[in-house]
Each structure stands twice: as C-alpha cells, then as structure tokens.
Amino acid sequence: MDTRHSDPSTGHSEHWDPTRPGDDPNLGPKYSIDDPECWNVEDPRCYRPGGLHPIELGDCLGGGGRFRVVHKLGHGGFSTVWLCHDKLSQKWRAVKVLAAHASKPESCIELKACRFLSGFDPQVLEHHHILSPLETFWLQGPNGRHLCLVLPFLGPSLQGGLAHSYGHFPSLLKDICFQLVTAMDFLHRNNLCHGDFRGDNIMFRLADGVDSWPEVDIMKLLGEPEEVTLWANWDGPEAEMEAPDSLVNRASVPLNRCGICSTDVDIADFGVSYNVSDPPEMTGIPFPLQSPEEILGVPPLGFPADLWALASTIYEIRLGSLPFLPDDRAYKRLVGMVLRMEFTMGPLPAQFRPAWKELGMEFANDEEDLSLSVTWNGKVNLDDDDTPRNLEPPFNHIDRAIISETQRLGLNRAQAEEIMCQEYRVSKLMPGYTRYKHVLGEAWPANYLYRIDEREVDQLVDLFKSVFKWNPDSRARTKDLLNHPWFEGRN
Image (tube, helix red, strand yellow):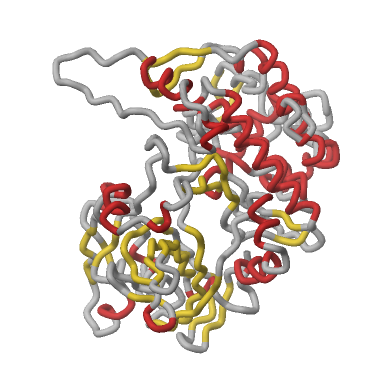
C-alpha cells in the first residue's frame, strides 16, 4: 500500500513511519506507557498528526453518537478496532478506525476494496466467506480525517493455527481450510488478490444471537477492559488532544467456550489487496508467509503469491507452525528463509539468482552451477560475528517423516475427548472444552498425543508440494486445491 500522504489538515507530506519517535528526535517519544511489555496495546507513537484517532471507552462515534465504545478488539500502526453498541440496530458491531494517513480517498486501499465488494450481493460474499463492511463513516479529529468501517462482531482469529487444540480432529480442520480455499477462489475469479492472507486476518463468526446479548453478558465473555495510563512526555496543549488519556488492552472471544463461535470463518482486512493486473512491488505480508518472488523482489506478484500464503496458512492450521519459519539459530533472515526453501524445493533456480546477487548475498557454491544450493555447503554465516560454522542442515518440513511424527495437543485427554464428543456439523458451532483448573500440589495431566494417519500424511505432502514451488507459474491454483483429495470431495 502506498503510505505517502499530503494532508492539508496537518501540513505533513511524508512517508509514514508509525515508529518515528516524534517531530523533534532530541525530545524523544511524545507519549509513553509504563511497562509496555505487559500490555497488548498499540504503539503510543502512532498518536500524532496523520496517525491514529484518540478514542476512549464510552466515546460515541458516528452521526448522532450512534456507536458507543465499550471495549478494544484490535490495534496496529494503521488502525484500531473497537467493540461498539449500535443504538440504531441494537447490535454489537466492530468499528475499525483507520489512521488518517491510511484514509486518503485517492489512495486508501480499504476504501477501494469496500467499493469493489459492495458490487456483490451480501449473501454471495457471506457464502464465500468474505467479510465486507456493513457501512462506512468518517471522523474528523486532531490527527486528521479518519475512515471508519462498521463490521460484524466476530470471534477470535486463527493466528497460530488450530492444531494446538484441534489437531486430533482432522475433519473439522479440513472444513475450515476448505472455506479458505473457497474464499480465495472467489477473489481470484474476480481478479482480486488479498495480499495479506494469514491467520491474523481470518476470523470465526459468532453463533446466532451473540451480537444481541446484553452488555453484562458481553463483558463476562470478554472480561472487563484493562487500561494503562498514557503519559505525555512533551509540554503543550496539543499533547492533550492528539492521544487518549489511556490505552486499552485488546480483548478476544475465547474459542473454547461452547456455543459461542461458529464453525464458519470470514476473510478480513483488505488493506493491501490489489487487482491482479496492477500488482504492487511488495505487500508487506509477514516475512515467513512471503513467496520467493516477494522475498527476493522478483516481480510480478499475483495469484501464485496469494496461493503461497494460503498453503502456508493451511500448513499452520493443520500442523501448528509455518513451513518456512527460520529456526532459532541466528541465521541472517534472508539466508535462513531461502535455506529452508532450498531444502524443500531444491537449489535456487536461475530466474532468482540475479536478484540474490543484487541483494549482496554470498553464494555458498559456484553461482553458475544450478544444481548447487546458494545457501548451503555445510556452513552458514551467523549474524553475531559473520563466521562460517558447520551446522546440521534444517529439516524439510514438508517431508513425510516430519508430518507423520507424533503430535502433542495443548490439551489433556479429557479435554480432547470432550471435543470429539460434540456433533459440530449438526450444531455448526466450534466444539468447546472445559478449561483445566489446576490444584496446587497435584500433578498436571499429560498432554494428549496423536498421529496423523498415513493416508492423510500422503495427501498433505502432495497438497503442499503442489504449491510450494520456485516457479510461480507451476504452482497449483485455487481450482486445483478445491478438488484436492485432502478435502475428500467437499467441493
């Protein structure tokens, strides 16, 4: 997304950096909080001209103060998301308030995506698991003009996958993953690439009626808001206007609660989406989910890059980790990622080697020999002192032996069996489980162990190998995945 802006209301024209400490680096950060590592809140430095809009609990947003703010649902450098009660519909809504620099009508990708999605029947979007704003409005504040998206109140995201609690329940995970392929297939058939397809941007729908619950029940579900005081480190009246008095910890609906979350999910956040005919140079999707062409800067991006992120997300949902996440050893980030890819897909091919060289990366072997790795000759340069050392090669995480290893749930046997006993396809609700209450002095129950059966292992390896290929044109497409044997005829 082009984050440059020229804001007549603030006089700023710059490339937006949400972590910039302030207008005068000699004064340090304008705002700060105590013990920032203890709070799940946005960076206070994002509250400045062109940045986030200051919002407090109890504020009323929109025309006539229609949306009363009750809790925080999300945050980042480009927006905050608030749980609001809609006085008109008497329902709970999520209101996403974009930073002023991200709200420019001429360059706001979220606004363009809203207009694009508004051309479809809402029931068609719902059927294809695409989250579209119910409506939009604008806020004018001390930091600029902000676009606000009114969205349904949704459950938790799929960040981190589901294998930790539901890995022993493959039919449920396949149902959810099939929805993701269905959603991406719809977008691609309409020439739209999501650009940031990952667990953070996939949300569970809530059971019917939860969005009409009394406020007291919503607070029991989410917990009371926790606030931390925001200190103004600079003197001046503007310090009292640009930022709120306190920041609020984000809340999320607990997935384990029975009868709360639907088994349906929605794809959200189209802030870096693009038409396939006009791709950006980069999307900014987190590094471990980037395709080789984005990591190495070899254009163009397009459907294959989206498919790479989709397959990585399916891997995370089913197996609990990302396939190309560099391990804990101190590899240089790019070397570590390409190293992992080479051990999965073979040596870096000719089309990417000029980019590797232009990035100033060393060749571990003869750069002209395409049969040899660019990252591995038994040694890897480490970040700390750049000394080549002998190391064991990384695992190929798409190897059959890795996927067929014994897996460990984050639940005990009783919790695992409680999940398995629930008829989720009848109720259309995510199976819940009772949180374990540990009694001091008692031993913790053992984690439940399981193995993926051999047939599914073969299917998973085939699915991942069909997408994880160096050549974008050789990767499977959504129609191939919809009919893949792993989905057992769900299409």
